[in-house]
Image (cartoon, rainbow, N blue to C red; front, side, top):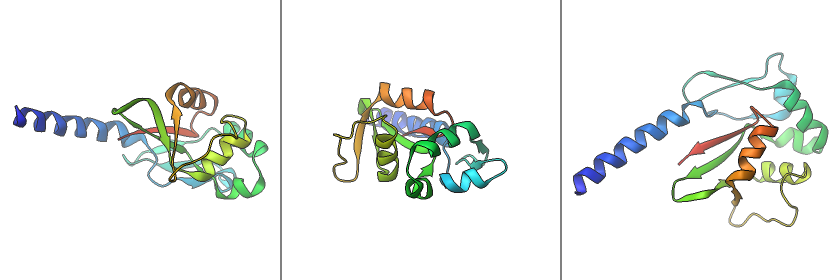
Length: 138
């Protein structure tokens, strides 16, 4: 049975790697994206991830100029099968930006450099800010 479990874990690991190919490998500051003629970043799979300019402008109009300089996009939430109802966020600038945008409560605090956000909220953020938010499987 142990060999079967090891094979299954290896297969799951390979499939997760395929799913994560679409995640941006080097996130780009919002201010830099706004200055690009065609705002793009490269994914882990080597393809272009194109940002929706109207979404970038929407975000930059709400957050402070300092945060516009430091916020890197896309924001990446981490999903683990062990915590099926929430995703982890470990980016303090993104956390602050979502609070400034009214998407996350100002009562929430990061603990140990992370905050857990309900999956329904993360899916809503992806819907509201397409191309600016991604989920990475762990």
